[in-house]
Picture 1 (tube, one colour):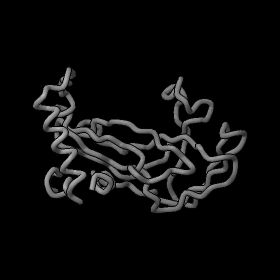
Picture 2: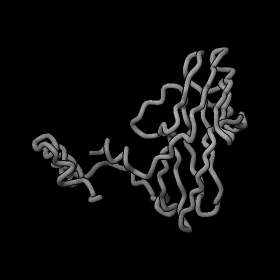
Picture 3: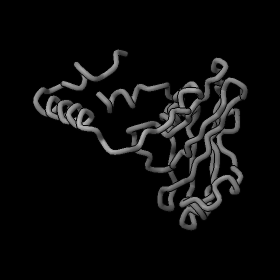
Picture 4: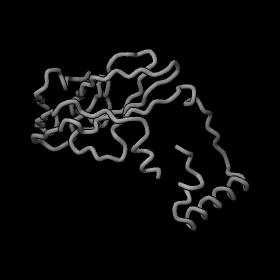
Length: 176
């Protein structure tokens, strides 16, 4: 169930139109094209990923035509679709305060495939959007030596998981 829950958390924004990527020079050059009446890809500021493991590949952005608005105090985590391989591009994760920023959010990416011509097909899952309440991210970690009671509870859960197929789903997973 954790695998499926990850797939269905939040929602998916699909690619609005088919995009052609021509990657060359070891990924240092990417030419794009599409047959759509709106811009689908543009360059992204290299300074925003300076020092990342993606250099010297140029950062680009895939354009999104949806506006996401959340209640006051909520933001959205934009990530590559969870548990789905990305073979041509790596969408870069980001958090946007969508309660205040009420415009379209474009998605930075880096072409990671070997040199060649690739098609990102219309409807391809592009980004997974996971809304969250910002106040809920301000939890204080508790790091220390595990107590005997905590150890007993951990071992009981572990033994139960091994002893009964589907134990997590029936006994530990929150209702959805």
